[in-house]
Amino acid sequence: MEIVFATNNLHKLDEVNQISKNFGVNFILPPNEFNPIENGNTFEENSFIKAKEAAFLSKNIALADDSGLCVDALNGLPGLHSARYAETQELRIKKLLNELNGIKNRTAKFVCCMTLVNANGKILFQTKGFCYGQITLEPKGENGFGYDPIFLPDNYNLTIAELPNDIKNTISHRYNALKQVLAFLNNNQTTNF
Image (cartoon, rainbow, N blue to C red; front, side, top):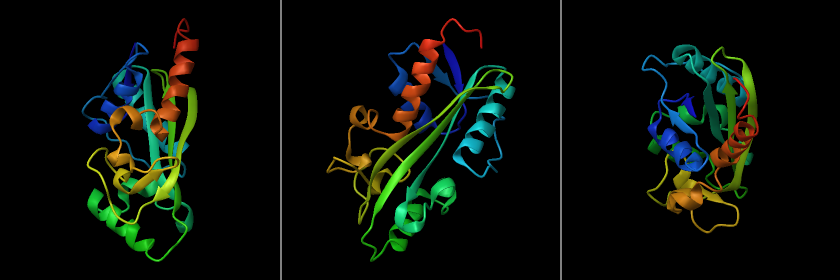
């Protein structure tokens, strides 16, 4: 089964295809003109906005995720604005570490909301996945993207960026959401979306 994954981020596309490789699902990029305006107030709303546009442009079933890092001591920030917290990945990490300077409570979670829609943009399934952990004092690791170098997942002594992909792809927020989507697809294989 081929499903449009509503993103322009090749890292995300590669990650979802690695996770789903044994499920008979192949995710592809949306058409080049895909450029949704993410003006929702929640991860769910933004995920739906992206999925609906990708489905409309491709005339195909589409899946979108909207994800972010929510830091408890910052009242959930950067949250919905994780990708726009600063101009570059390096500056986003630097800004977050500066805001946590001197703060002992460094608990945080990655959140991923996924929305699956049919070719007409009707929601077929929507879910959330989480990955809980702590924000480190400094970046470590070269693997991954986004805030991965400063996120230490619970029960691990390496940041997400230090973990090999085969481990990351079994604990990440995206994995925890996507496995629910894949289960939904598996249970509804005969359904005409």
